[in-house]
Image (cartoon, rainbow, N blue to C red; front, side, top):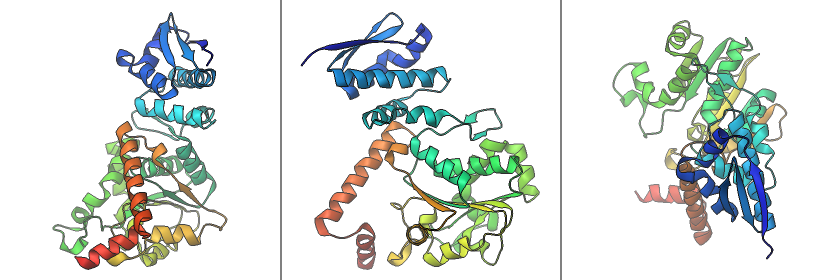
Length: 339
């Protein structure tokens, strides 16, 4: 096999230092994942190995350099994601992802998509009236939806932001929890509070809550209402029944937009009931103005290990299903019957 060598110039020692990482950790990841030899040469990196692998590594370094020059942070998960995109022949996707600011937090931080899947999700929200964002934990489903809601409110596209979740995660009913309504639902709605406070700042958030411009409530309190001129987010929708999902979707009034998020691998419904999220994405997929975006482990933007954990669990569950021909929901139902 012929040896092939190229030189990737980063332009400056500062850019080179950012790409290399602590103790050359980033460079070692690139070399390992692409199968090349890589070493520092001046303000650049010299790559040696099989021609196809070297071209792949050079492409990755070029895209990572663009990320650095754009002032974006570089971490292990983003490097691995860029390598995977390059292997799929979609290296240009990483630059498309970086273009466009979704929202700006009260501290001036720009919120941007970090994966191709997230970009498709955000674009779908812009184009459609109802969007289902389905995927594992850490893919930014809720956070990006809240960012889009705040952006729509600031641009005067909507008059209210309404966020809701079904309160069934711990298998408890609200009536059995201590305290008033706000105290009862707080633990379930905390992720929504956190995202809103980051976007708006605590003072603005409190003022908008007091004025009723922002409303956060359990799903049960949506019944009988018509929600007009609002950006409405239903979070943890995998824990809705078919009836609850239909009730929620039919609350929409004029000038409103809905985003429904959930993770179909974390269904906590009792008695083996079918998830309203799964049912809705199946029966509504051919309706104009409604779009479902399915995020994967590749779109996880938390610690790099989260991506690997999700992949491991997914493979394990697939092996179990193949071994006995039963779906995950069927096995959960049988186990609950035994208990």
